[in-house]
Image (cartoon, rainbow over all chains, first blue to last red; front, side, top):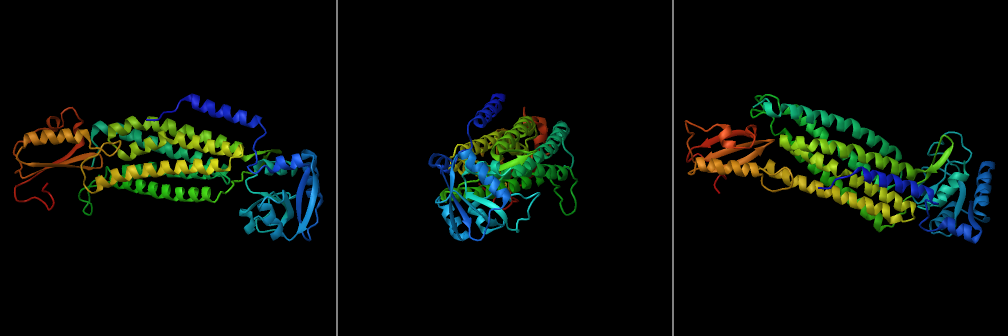
Length: 145
Length: 308
């Protein structure tokens, strides 16, 4: 019979504390590392979308934090999000609805500059990042505050 | 036998109280897990397991409500087997849920899906949802471990398989929480597969519990020989009773089955004797309330399938 001891909980708590102290979470595909090392942020902007002031501010915070310069690529959302999914881009900017079929393929940030919750079906200015790149998604989230 | 035997009434009341505690406490765990689970497969699987963990408690309370009821015209043997039915139902649910979770997590692993756990903002502070998930999983470990330990001795005294299976599942629940924490910690370290792998291990555990419980429950429903509380082996108490009955009536064929928590014994090929030994004598050192019925079938009147 398997039993548990109070020390099990202590170990779990201690492990959490240690993990938070490190620069976690990390990216499985290393997006943030690559951006910081190369000094280039490969940014896709959906054709016709203009970067509004809150999104500009997010981008400024992100480039300041990573020390990277944006390298902008323009194209339609389908092509850009496919490139993002394949790791050819680091970030895509455009007006996306949270209920878009792409929301399963890539991660959409919170709506930029929105006060309160934007309905899922309503397109709003957002940054898209590769799924699972939790460190990078965290960095974008912190820059969006 | 509509009323519970007096030696187990207090334990029965305590068991019901513990199951109500289980529903209340585990509901808080389910709510916390739901609010924090995000896209983590390990979290989702642990969440499903916690919901499943409520089923034995609910089935116990339903069967405990029915069991002491008096027999009716439509149910002339009373509701003693409500407990057996409840046990079977929860075992089957457990099996299906295990298969479903193995499928979803196995395919997720094969498709190399990278789980995303986004940041959340509370009171102006932005932090990774994964830390909140780990805290929720750590909390989810506490109630089942305590409740499982409290239930086990009562389940043994009551010879209650639903309560016992419930207590075993709860006692082992810390593994689910720990596997979930390992999965989230793996994601934090950039190991995308850790989450699905942890979830898969949890799901295999759920299926194993389900298969063990279904085997035991099926044996009871098809009037198999009474099984032990733990595992699928024969109940030692029933074997001892069988020996004593065979000594008393060596010319008869003794068969014992289990109906809920009671042993029902039949001696075939023997005319009902005028002087039947007392339950104390027949049960020896085992609890006398366990012998729920002793019946005799005269020679030539055996039911179909009674021959060995």
